[in-house]
Picture (cartoon, rainbow, N blue to C red):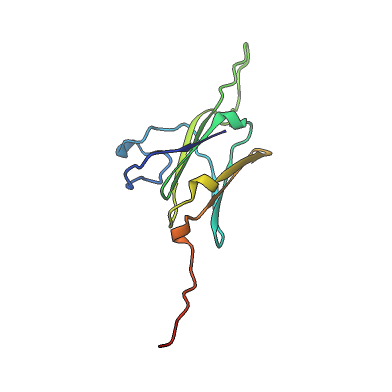
Length: 135
């Protein structure tokens, strides 16, 4: 699994996974996501059964997480499918989160076909308590 520390980019990134009209590459597969917000971080869960960690690339830029990969095509000789629902092809999901992210502290694990990505909020996005002094 690759995680990229990407250089600064434009902030106008669409969250639609397949968007032919805004310059994003088309994708063959829609990967379902859950996005949870905790006090100091976000957790993204992506359902990607059958993939290995080296088949997945994750890029984080400012407040956007980009997850992409490809489900391999299964080649079998002399097989005629009556129904084929197993996903094959490329996928890409971009998620814009409400705050800037701490890319250096992000971590990802792949467990039983589910990618778990924890991305802490950037220090400047965390709530602070300010002491009020009397004069």
